[in-house]
Length: 268
View 1 (tube, rainbow, N blue to C red):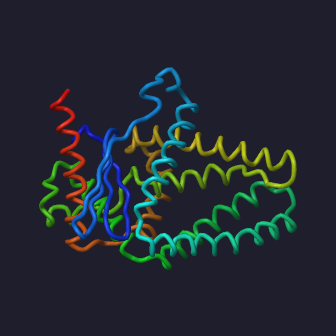
View 2: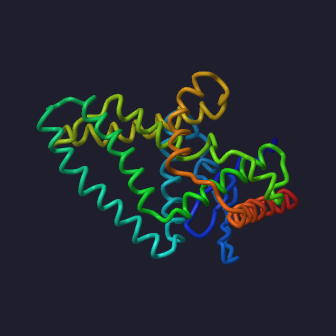
View 3: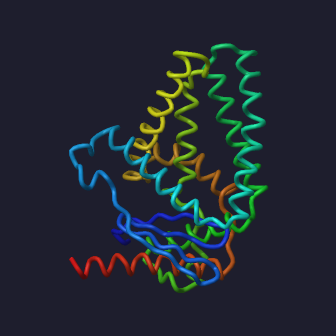
């Protein structure tokens, strides 16, 4: 198994692969983009400690996500924004209704947020083009093949690999949902709104800290239980079986980012 940790992001027309230092995007039309990745913590290691590092890492994740969002085809952007708008239009009045019915019941409100998000994710998966989910499956298959030491240029060898991956952002999103649902302050005026915002930041950072530990010990029974929900979301919502051409695109993206890593090592 390789020591290089690889992550990725699926688009409706391609796959982006990234390591700690580089990213590479390959589209189905053959076009490519690539660049370097840096972390503020690399230059300020004194801040690399419990909780604070996760706040910084989450902010960097969001920044990188917004950067890659601009690479989504315009039609995909509009479709995604439409479904997010529908989600907000439906859940915001329902949130007020839940508030009126149950008052300051954080567990009830948290449960509502949990199940409404799951429902929204399912609806978005139905409304978005299926190619983003099949490319997501291709991304996972190629990364799994790489981590198992298989030839990622061999489509047949990659195809038999799982489209479920432990480090998938779906697992992280599910963990965030669980943590926020354990206690979610019902947002209102004044101090309640401030409490809700503060808890959200706390929940995001703690979720990332927990996720980091789960990835260190993925085979522990506790890790498997916690990751089970996210894996089922991957299985039924956020990934689909890709075709051979999509596997080739994902493979080329990983090959490109590994080439960048190799060139960097050769220079070092």
